[in-house]
Image 1 (cartoon, rainbow, N blue to C red):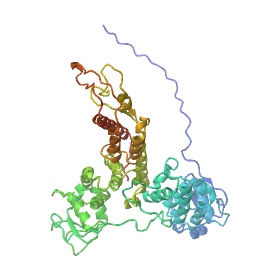
Image 2 (spheres, rainbow, N blue to C red):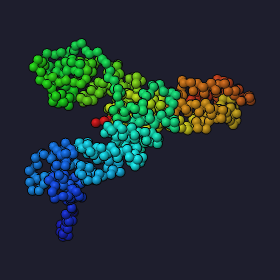
Image 3 (cartoon, rainbow, N blue to C red):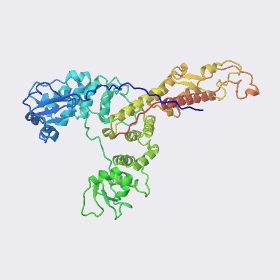
Image 4 (cartoon, helix red, strand yellow):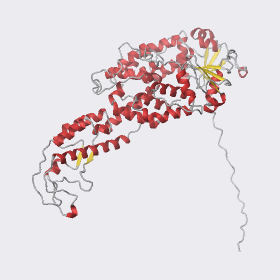
Length: 567
């Protein structure tokens, strides 16, 4: 019988609480002179809790933003502070440089690139011309420019400082810092793909780069002249010219519509707010916020869109349950996708995403940029692979498209890295297994019980592409060169270099001379006892190419392409 245990009382030791932890934010402290003067009439507190006691008269003359800031009424919480106080987001190091330029003291020296960038951002934020002048001068000083011209180039492009970008670009290209530089300068992702493209062309123009003379280029590269701006290139964006719709059709002519969308070319689409809300809640909120009440229209408020009538029509038809007409024009597809992403219309994006596989060969580079901007990893890889197969690695380096100006350079850098990795993967040393028959790797002239024949030595069943038979060295060198430029199994099928290998092997005279006795019935799959022919050589060549293509496919499948959606 179970007997319950008696409760036992334990006396717990007293709980000793740890001392109170210090506050997470340090106590405010005064900045160094001259920002600690008692005759100051205002305080700027940095993000790391350093108080700069400043004079209104100096800052209001130096900066229009400070002029506005220092005249704002103070919140009620500051009634006990002797001087009005404003918290700013800059740290004390940045604020110190910024204010010293404004004050009639000796100008500080900028010898640190991270600090220079922070000061430049603050100078733009507060609109301080004197600081901008100081920063521009510091950027082209040999001490900074020679130490890291690539980062100076990035900063100059980010802030539209063309003379400084030109100087840094020339220094960067001269020192061969552009290609493969993302590991040492991750800030390269901060500029546009167009700015990096122009820097890349400057690098490629030097004599010491392998892509100086693109022999296999299908699309001519856009010339980059010595005087062309890096930051804001002229005449790079050419908008497609389309004939506006003459009129809108059903269902955008409904008299009971409660919202009017007016295209950039003046065509009005009468739509239902309910339908547009279901298609994209963000779209309706954005349009209503910028609508104009037009007394002459009885269809409700009017929102003027930046897109033309052809784009608007295609975009809206994806929202309505009236059937969606397939789009074949590439420019229109990309413009509709851009609008769908802008207005967050998911259905339109999904429809365009579904047609990417059959559109990819029209212009894989433009489609890659579009897919990567949307974060479509599968479609972006499909486009990148097609680009390398059709146009080659050189075109990735040298072809320009206008979309580069509105695209983060990270997307372009990842494509360049993918192209280089594929080139190396396809042309590396592969082990090829050459089997003329699924059950027997031997050359057909070798007797069953004999060792390998002389033909088996000349036409081996295992070939290493980096150490081929000497009589095929030149042919394999051509294959590897072609694979470096166009890393794809297509090189090993119906191309001139593949046919050259078949021709060389077919014209080679088999060295076998001995005649063996016929094989027994149990080994009837081995046709032995006859001299090899040109046909046997051709079979061996095709088996070799087929194995080579399989190895290339396997190597390329392992190459990763990172795709991240843009905000």
